[in-house]
Length: 293
Image 1 (cartoon, rainbow, N blue to C red):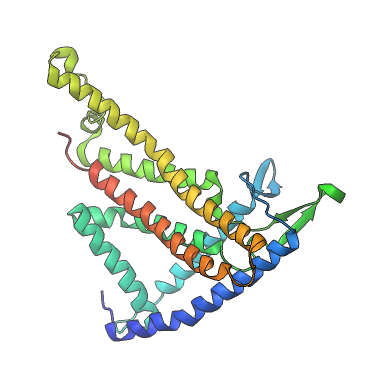
Image 2 (cartoon, helix red, strand yellow):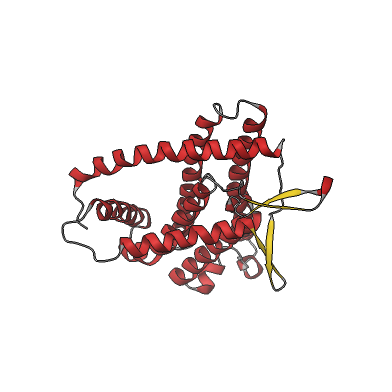
């Protein structure tokens, strides 16, 4: 890939004012929303905006759909009419895609495997990143409708941070889990891969080594299934805790001053959580494709 390195500083410096303005706008908008609510309202269950038939449409699901739409639009324009001498926009994406692809090639020790699993790992990272950052945008959590009457009136936002919904983070965990298991089966075969977890050699030859191998396989199987919990709850817990912290600070502290560094910190947390999820998926794929011992 061709990347014009002299243009890259201009790209990043050009993003700084946009980032500062984004933080300021989102902070004031959410601060106003916290004041208008008159207190802190924390919901573990997602807000239901409407229904399609019997299927509930939640604010977190709409946020995930919006993040998906934004990614599709960006991908369309990023891959449209690439030039031999790249523009700043094309250079940024070539740097991102080329850097991640080279890193995956080094980790998996195979450019073939990197080419095969790059789309899913990169999609997981970008999807979670945009979904996390979307939760800090102006209007998210503060634009919606009031339902009920009198004392039972409650506010339902149209959009809410997607990762604060355990259903969505669990869906990501299931996707990553299926990809990891598929990678292992495709690399070493179904029976050899299953032999990593179910070792019945002790039935034919009951010695100490085979018995230990049987119990180690069970531990590996439990740890493999536990990834569904660790993947989903890690992402859910960090994003939900960050959103709750912002609400508390905006309500109990000075809502137009203190939340600014917290908003910037949440941008960083959103990136780190997306990075961790994608990198763990990559490293578990690396473990899965290795020959069992």
